[in-house]
Image 1 (cartoon, rainbow, N blue to C red):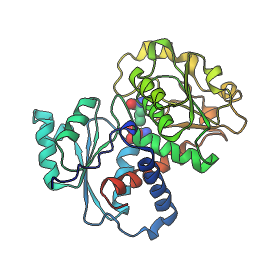
Image 2 (cartoon, rainbow, N blue to C red):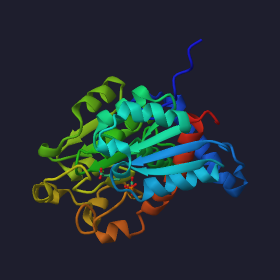
Image 3 (cartoon, rainbow, N blue to C red):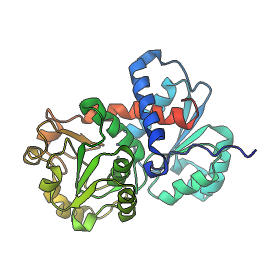
Length: 305
Ligand code: CP
Ligand code: NVA
């Protein structure tokens, strides 16, 4: 019998709803268990490869894995042979002999796909220029902690149609919430992801008007105007200036709307200080939940839950 395919976590569109829901249930169970968690990943090792900077993803994967009893090895692509031309495929084959899972953050999605194609252990997407599914798992978990089941609720995405927007689009199909995106014409979200989600029956509307998008929304979310893979800083600032989430925009959302942001944030750019530091903001609960969401993903990928 050929060995079972590794449980990769590459994008929300590639996993079904019960599997994703199971990861979130595990995340919540682990969060509630606190230190009484035990060590379901004892003896397992995870390699973390970063081609781009990170604070939350790096620390939450490392601490999350350690608290489950596993160990991690942190690798910067600059210090690996991959930085000197060793292929991604060979790196995948070699690492698979040492570790039980590999997380990659890269600004070239093809590298993630190539790693997954050649690894015999699970590969986890720690952000690419096209998607950030680990973050949106934590975001769904945070919404549900704050406001109950997300299905049928309305979420508003304001600003750049970037990697986070794509993962929100996929999440809308998988978790059954309404998504309203307000993005400038120049920075529309991934058309393929939109078409895919709509074909799955997702309720998604795209507009250029932030005011329209936040109407009835129980969560308003946005992201930096300049992502790690972007270079056109000045033109993005000009194009996205009308897409700042401020108090006036929040006032148009549902009265109990929460504000989320994956962080890092830029006060006075995509969000006003009053909103991100104000009573509707749950951004630090959201950051905290990266730890538990990751644990849910890891436990599933490594076959411990
Ligand atoms: N939100 C997020 O992924 O943050 P880092 O870039 O710090 O990992
Ligand atoms: N869109 C941002 C998310 C950072 C966590 C970026 O790609 O830089």
